[in-house]
Image 1 (spheres, helix red, strand yellow):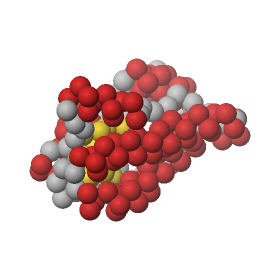
Image 2: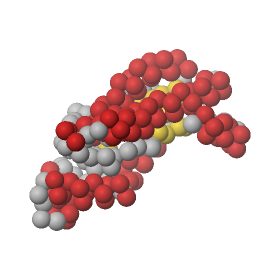
Image 3: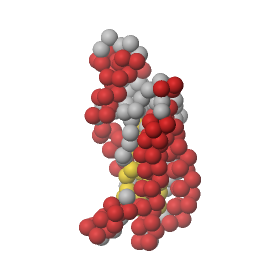
Image 4: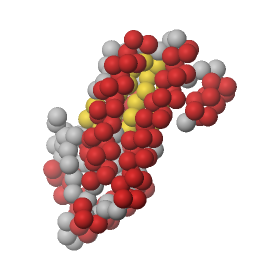
Length: 193
């Protein structure tokens, strides 16, 4: 991550926006089947990876002296628990605490730090989750599983990649200059707290 931050400075003359978007969401198992290696893999990428990314970005932004925006892609799982997702949910809950704490230190430097918490989005990883969880809940098909999901969301559909991207763009804009230490739900009303 430090090499990436240095690359941004060398290539673009500075670093003003950093988005931590790497994550593991494919290690889903019943609680008693989770191994220490499973746990470490998810925590290392989803939580520790964001920590190191925040450090690398903040180091450059503080040195530049002009503030900046850092956004973590958290999840609805940062606010609610889900079966078969102990490490994932713990890592995303951890991002809430990490963001709140680090934002306090970065605020005096004009750096905002926030999380975006989307509900389910069918990306490549999301498609794997659709297959897995449709079997876990006993849905007749993936389409039935997705329809049941849509039915419980007030906006009547799962999230789209663009929904998450739009929230990130907002948090990186001047319109969000006074928003920091927050975890913004992008869930169509499914996660109302």
